[in-house]
Length: 60
Image (cartoon, rainbow, N blue to C red; front, side):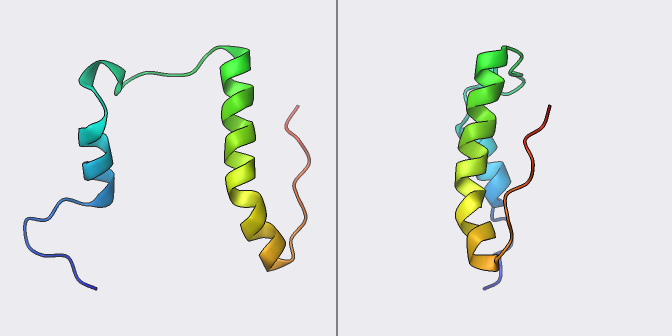
């Protein structure tokens, strides 16, 4: 599949959908960071299991 000239990349499309006031937001609350890590791990864990890799040790 090739991109059409002038077509926005997926990243550009997603960025455009984020309201401007939230585009530079950064998570700095410990509970928010823990939740984000949990969600990210859940998203990539099935791919690791299919590849036969074990889960990494939790960050301290």
